[in-house]
Length: 345
Image (cartoon, rainbow, N blue to C red; front, side, top):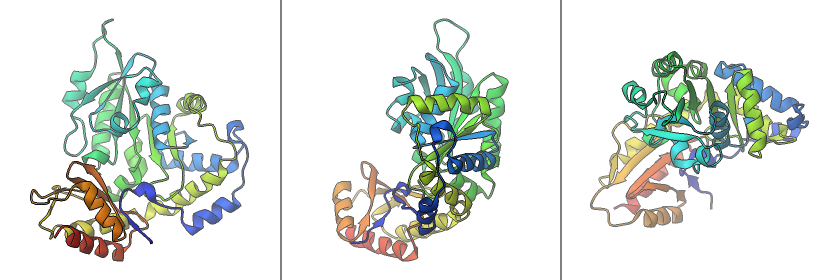
């Protein structure tokens, strides 16, 4: 059975153009720095982010980890939101592997952090306290509904941080989705921060990889961290070739995914057993809760949907997240609305 897979945009498969580019990729040993395709991808990524250099890494989690470890020493503290991906879903790597302490703040509904909360979290120069070193932001913000952080907000946080001697790292896993939603360039969103990671393997459809970007000295440190973490790859140009296609082609079409998410949300809004989050979708993610009268569990709903050819994934008790992407077309949207109506009747 060919499934309609709405569990995440991580399920995207490489396009035919990507597969062809991968097959023809010129390669070398990336640990020696002589894989021309990886080097081209890194240069493209850095330019698109407004940074001096880039580093191809196997995953966004490794990109965030290498980035934070490159900014912080053991015992330093990073300020981030309680709903940020790094805090929730990256296995505590910054603490386990880096000895970096985290100070978690409440995210606002749009995913942002209040400057007043950040200021209150900055530690005094006291031997009892860890040293505040870094602020981490996320754009789009996954657990806050795929919401976007504006260029003005990012600039405000960066200016605030830099005035106090702090650095800012941006988890931009879906940064190009934010850029598409705001109709701005990715560079406008990433320019003010000191480092940024973005994923090639979500809505951009590449099979593997993320890129971490920053100034040359930062990337030099991050390259050491990547090696330490086991991320030094060899003939990685085979993978980077798909990433180049992603940057050249897939970044330009993300608004289509957003439009289909809006159409899907509109269709689901007519189902009395579905309670959509206010404002959903902000980008390509739809969040909703089950109405009180629904007797089925989320696992039962997942199974019933699967038998009808649709894969969905619960994001909490009586709660779902649906994600549109390149492989979800208009017919898939219509079928999903109809099947939910059948399952939740």
